[in-house]
Length: 150
Image 1 (cartoon, rainbow, N blue to C red):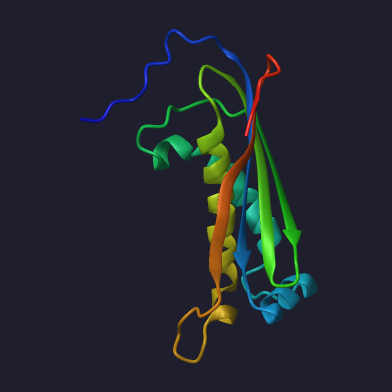
Image 2 (tube, rainbow, N blue to C red):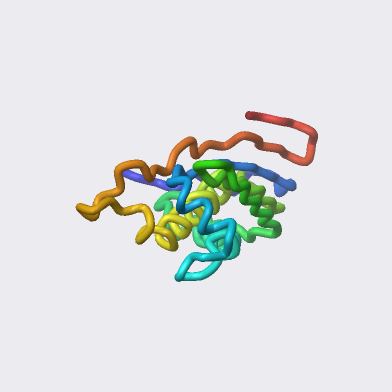
């Protein structure tokens, strides 16, 4: 049997979490992104908007996740030689943490990047031999009482 955790007795405090992840791409695809030469549009802008929506929709995607009022979503995308790294910080005054919102935000951003560049990543058989999403994790968790957990 499944159940959502009862948070009714917990105090509302400011909570923040940061998650990161990356997508490995071909150097040619990264070059296209840097040059603004992606047919579907700017993957970096798309990732930013997708991460905000991902954070807001976390409770609809993660079955036992509490719906919370997200107050802050700060996405960052770093372009590397053969990958893009996404970091998102999510904050809210709530009775429960915002780790799932941060992870959902990163995942949404990475999926949207992949979708926007997939035509450049396919080989001659229509496969993705090198493209991969990896290293999605929570790197920081904070409560306003000064408690830090990683």
